[in-house]
Image (cartoon, one colour):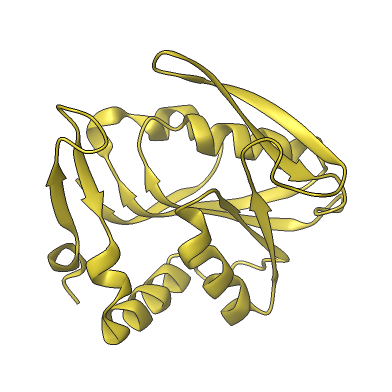
Amino acid sequence: MDFKSYIRDIQDFPKEGVVFKDITPLLKNGEALNQTVKALLELLDDKNVDKVVGMESRGFFFAPLLASKLGAGFVPVRKPGKLPAKTLQQSYDLEYGKDMLEVHQDSIKKGDKILVHDDVLATGGTALATCELIKRLGGEIVQCNFLIELTFLNGAEKLKEYPIKSLIKY
């Protein structure tokens, strides 16, 4: 399937000069959605996964679907103040400033095999912060999966210690 044909470019969103990769055409097409989940699972090469970690907010589209198909749990990583139980925090650098992510302290056990999923790998800051949270909880990252990788932003360089797979590359 030509997955790129279901991704539309939105010029100057969320700010001028940015070309946003909009996946909603893919999400609203049942066949494309099912084929995407299947293709993302094939990127795993039969790796054993206990939990799939998805980052707020676009990582929440596919990560739970992948977890369900794998018989694994789903762990959300969110912005501060959105998780109700005790959390572990990790800050990360943005282009202009810093941000922070949180995960429940009891969401990952030592030795859990983790698939990290987000819809877009751009600069890699969010994914790297998520990987740091997982390591601090004792999880073992088996792979980082992305629907889209914006290769020109070199985000994969920040994640070079982990196996990375992307379904679509720009």
